[in-house]
Image 1 (cartoon, rainbow over the protein chains, first blue to last red):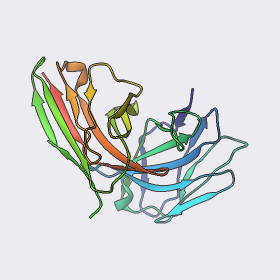
Image 2 (cartoon, chains in turn purple, red):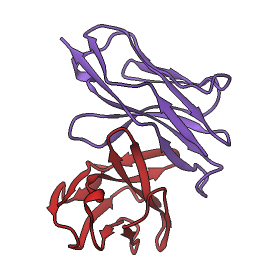
Image 3 (tube, each protein chain N blue to C red):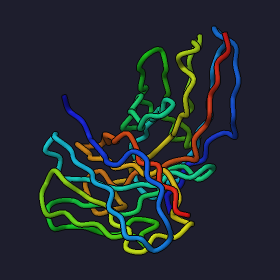
Image 4 (cartoon, chains in turn purple, yellow):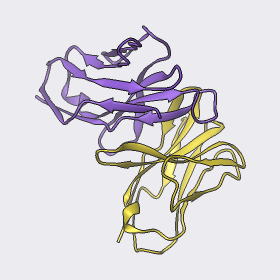
Length: 117
Length: 110
């Protein structure tokens, strides 16, 4: 079945450091890929998405490129801020699973990011 | 404001005492779902609904029930809660490929 694997956390960085959170996936169809962010005490929010191979999603300085050849969707940011401290979830939506045109969302286990001043 | 609301936000209960967590969305979305979030496991889907009166099991449906009598509401029912249902629960509605999540309900079953 479909699955998403994220790098082990937690990740601790200093402000202005470069961030990479690795995400790889397995899917039976042609999935769309997502990064969601969960700030403390809140629900998940969509951060960015990509719907086909080689697409790059970007938002708030974060970006991720859909790499079909390596089945990856790594999240990057050039200079993190304290306000980026949150839990980040990689997810995929596979139209061949779940009986809808967009399929069921399958999440990775989440990566906790802490940014220190 | 477009949103998904859940109530209560926090709940402590005892084993076997029936409870309902409400979920409501004001975006007229057809697809709604419930997830539970546990450390190291990410989010796992409990139940989903593709429209009114259409519900189906997700990955971890045991011990839960849902109903979808109206488009905007999708309550989660625990008929006889057990300690292994202690978790953080999220309701979500979806438009196309994007899900919109509620703020979460932290449930503790003693």
